[in-house]
Image (cartoon, rainbow, N blue to C red; front, side, top):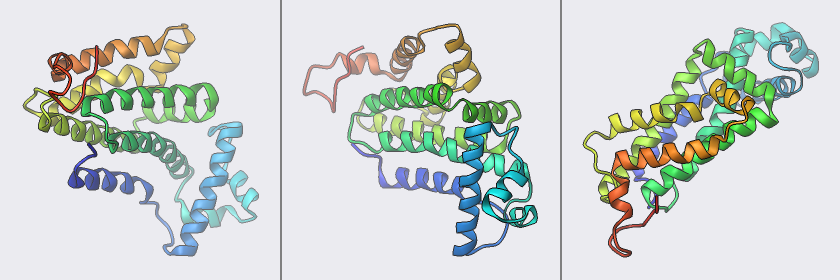
Amino acid sequence: MPLADDQARQIRFNRAGDFHGSSGPKGTDSDEVRARILEVAEEYFRRIGYGKTSVADIASELGMSRANVYRFFPSRNAIKESICRRVLNGIAEVAFTIASSNAPPLEKLEKLLTAIHRHCKMTLLKEKRLHDLLVAAMQENWPVINSHIEQLVTIFEAIIREGIGMGACKIEDPAEAARAVNTAFIPFLHPILIEHCVQRGEDTEAALREQIRFIQKALGQSDYARRPAGCGPGRLTI
């Protein structure tokens, strides 16, 4: 079943909070200029990398002065963090879409973890320069990273609470369980660890399936999976 309305509202609130917050002029026209600056910046980041992209490059592409760019973003770092936020919002959108589906809770969790890992892995393989931006954000502990992790934990917790209500999860503290799921998932989410595994030719999806089985059992999925058909909201063989 879909997330409860209050759960969905909380996740949407968290997602919306990451789309805004840039300093500078306010209003529709200003929002359009700010969005255009980010579009151009992201194009440059994809093409030559964030390290080689200057504010002068962005300003020149837009036909404006550097000073005008700084009216909307106080620094080059603010632009980098905003692009990082856009990339991470793509991950959060994948997670939210799956969490809002009608699948049984722990099936949703499995699909969600798998989809996020594949999304992160494809960013490495297809958009290496954006992947490098995420690596820098992780290494330098940008605030947007903590916000993103909080988003994911909120989504994990909402699914676990749904699972408790349907008898699929057998834990007492859904918030603690959500944090534990996030910790167990780090090797399949962290860009540096994913890159390390890919370079070594490791089968990350096989390892992820094993980790998901571990998470499901920890949440009570092993008993849930053995229920006869028709005795619960869904079955998931492990």
